[in-house]
Length: 391
Image (cartoon, rainbow, N blue to C red; front, side, top):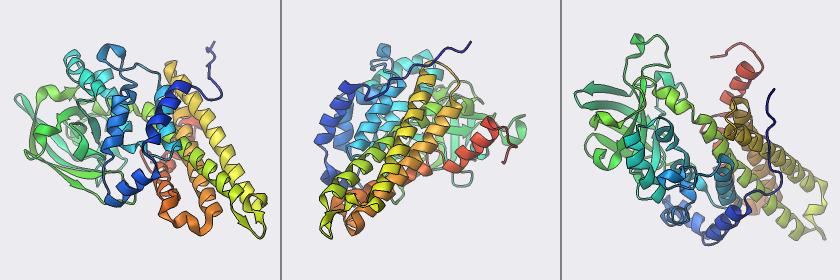
């Protein structure tokens, strides 16, 4: 008999929420607008979150972290977005270390996790996506070839966010040629690369100008030599090592979408009550009311699915369906809420001082990354509904 899951309804982790809100109060819309204009990294915000211990939420206490459950970490990200900020510069520090925690050697854990927990080392960069392979990770071209006590890395990564602001990179590369493996998912290995030593010695980082200020880059490897002991887990099983943390990643970043949806709804409601046209508040019109109300309903439903996904994850139960549904529903809820907020504000939504156009651009990325809604629908079709594999 399956054990029932327990989920807290209402506003959970109130102390954490209040702590994040206090920090975010020091980083209002003007702070994020100014960064957006300069395409700058939010160093002060990241440091404040680090000093408060929020970025080490998922690292066990034995390594200096808070050892909090996944839902608590999600709440941290949600509140940043609900306050009008953007947690894109912080979320990787929270979950990328999971591969090291689950598959790293005792020496790797002892060396890196306490430093990451203390904020003395930043593990923000995740080198997986490539220009030619995209989401088809098994076709990636970056190679890592064993040479004595080192591996020699050649290739290219793209959309590697925060690489210029990270000390370490979790890198996925092919160690066995595709034609020599029985399964295309084999022959890939994951490495923990010290970027402080690599940049200028075989690693080159180039910023990518993008629609949102996400500090993303492309990274080139030209005979980069990395020590053999940077291999995390078993050689050839790197894709599996990374994939077992994907559900956690999707659950976490989906909380950002929930925060966005809440910000959009709250902002739209406030303006609809205050804006008077033709002698009445525009919020009195059903054409304004209905999109906002629908967005609120979608956000509430998405949040329930996320809570269910987090509860299943913490219970050690399979949660692929819940994690993917939560990602899909929350991304769509944030987008619909953004559209409702844009329409409610009319022309003023395009004025940067209102922060709506910035949040609208930021919310859109969740329908594409870290997993696109189309791939989620394919997963649901095949693995949940039993339809034939489409790719």
